[in-house]
Length: 382
Ligand SMILES: Nc1nc2c(ncn2[C@@H]2O[C@H](COP(=O)(O)OP(=O)(O)OP(=O)(O)O)[C@@H](O)[C@H]2O)c(=O)[nH]1
Image (cartoon, rainbow, N blue to C red; front, side):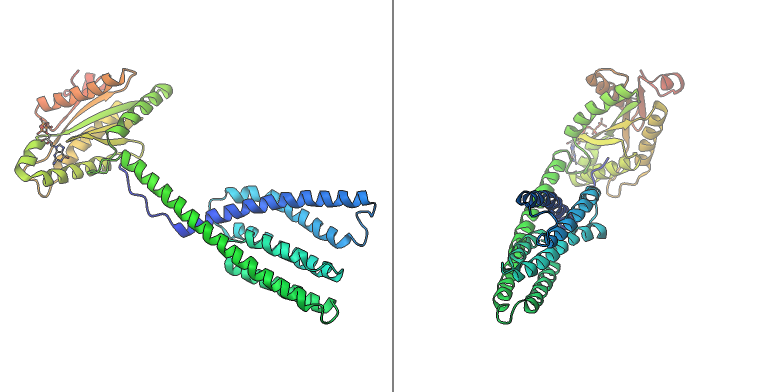
């Protein structure tokens, strides 16, 4: 059918969708890493002989275990979330929960290791990971990092002897800022890449459309028709579905050009293209074959239906008052039915019938190779 220009892509929505899907992929990878990490840590402790449930190991165990549970939850839910086509709130929530969980882990572990004199190392690692994960939600990221920093600071002030907390608190603050700016940079970079890819995709799509589109009528062109003819005839043979071809030629179009000018001629062609398109179903293929000639592939239309459509096209064009054309505009139509003949013959049969319509006085339809018509319709010619 006629090529309708696509509405401009909703860039923001498309980006959000792409961003969420890509973040979910990250969550998925991290979930697997957490599972592996848990296993390795457990084996390490068992080999040391300290036991998986020694008091030293308990906070780590708690954190790992909850991570494993969360990872399993992710692994169960993510496949369905990732195929979801919309940036729905449940997908967003799932995506947000993982960084929030990581932030919690980093905070708890930092306070714990600081109490043992190791410093807030998990906080630093955690913040960097979170910064990478929550690109696209900068406000959420900043709020999350800031809350973690406040929690770690409060924990350090409470747990450590006075005077010893200020240095790790300052380290945590610097880490929080660095993590935030890393995320901003990564986000900018990603938006840039996304925009370039989106533009490239849009331009490719436009080029693809232009390659098969007639610039005047916006119908498909001859190149598209030739390709489609091969596909539809093969389909028709395989599934034994009827396939019909109409060739529509404007009567005395040269006179319209000569009397009213080429611009009016162009307007008449566009109007005819619209009138034809209005009679078509979604599967039918309408093309401008060249000059004042149009071809129509009626997919799964039997002879009776095709005759009705061809007559409707003829009548609608005859009835239409073309505003700037001084004479009446009519068309002649040739019809052929596909029954497995070579494609050249198929085209030629419809073409012969179109010329037969012209010979018989124009503004009519002539049919070829159709038993229904040969027996019953007086205008049928074979
Ligand atoms: N305005 C306009 N004219 C075109 C275009 N393409 C082809 N033509 C003209 O269309 C005319 C086609 O004329 P023909 O098909 O040869 O003959 P006709 O006048 O239609 O006569 P019959 O086909 O016998 O009814 C030619 O004068 C072409 O110059 C186009 O894109 N715009």
